[in-house]
Length: 201
Image 1 (spheres, one colour):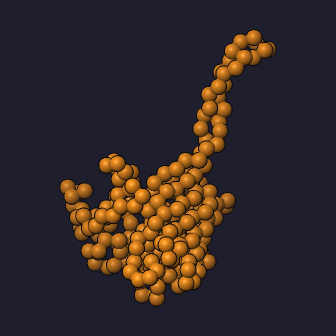
Image 2 (cartoon, helix red, strand yellow; image 1 turned 135 degrees about the horizontal axis):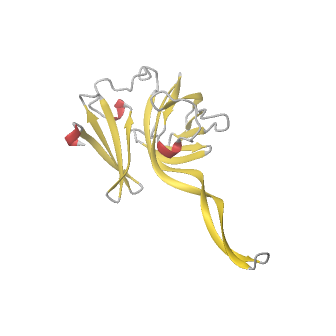
Image 3 (cartoon, one colour; image 1 turned 90 degrees about the horizontal axis):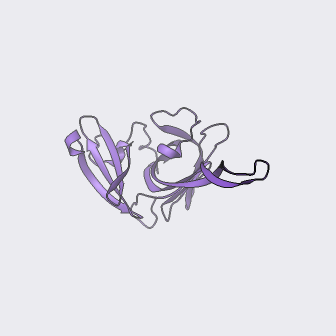
């Protein structure tokens, strides 16, 4: 990363996954890199607010001026449904031969990923990557989907977003534990960045 003009800003570790944030001043770009057991797991561009040397302190939308406006980077595990081939063989009494066959069976695939949220009293948006995005999805703007029905209370931040005509996932951030939960065709559970005070957000 340093050879490409990026400067290491900070590092953290969550549930066996190491995360580093890198800032490229020439490109005004912040990048997060995750590694598991010393191997690269993911690399993605994240809002500039996640790199402390960012000159603007936000990713472009003027959400920072709103009370309680937040940019959250959440690290964790996603789950989605997939299909896997199952090979079997058996005796066919009609042909009097042993024959092989292949059946497709549904399975759950687990994967490491990052989800970024920008939320405030005026609404918000969510940035997803990789397997958190289904093959058929609504068009995103630079990887961001708008959030609707965003609601703040003392314990949680909730909302939802629209991926396609079938998938309308819901989000919930526990403001005490800092855990983000997404429920939909792609599920996610992960720990968001900490803040100071009695509650995390």
